[in-house]
Amino acid sequence: MFLKQIKLSNVSKDRLSRLKGKTGIANWNILCRWAICYSLKENTVPTDVPIINDSNVEMSWYTFGGEYSDLYEALIKVWCIQKGFDTDDETLAKYFKLHLERGIAYLSGTNFIKSIDDLLFLALEE
Image (tube, rainbow, N blue to C red; front, side, top):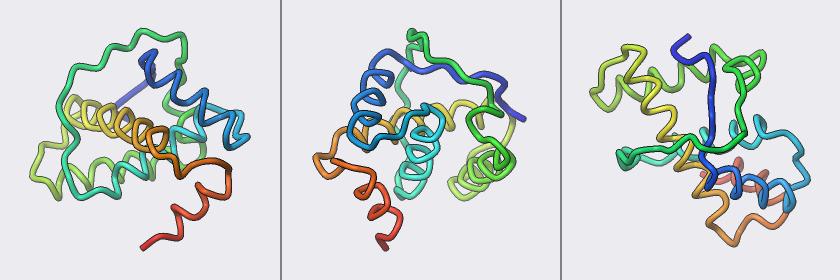
């Protein structure tokens, strides 16, 4: 396990709050899972910007990943290997956080997401 706790920025918290309202998904961790997967789907490296973890939204790694926490860790590790990055805990944590922030921004930044159905359509896209 490369992360024990995940803390979001206030910007991401606000974005997730809007997504919660649009989709009806009540749990932060579920929306964060969607965000990670959506960002990992992109074929680009997230911009390496400092992330200010200044919100009161915090969850453990196991709350984030649930019974699939090992799968999410493997996804980040495979992505790092494919991009030629190290797979030490620090690098994995860095790119997990960057993907999480980017994924939240992407999901909330599109006018496409107006309901939970729109999230499901994202999963069906090729």
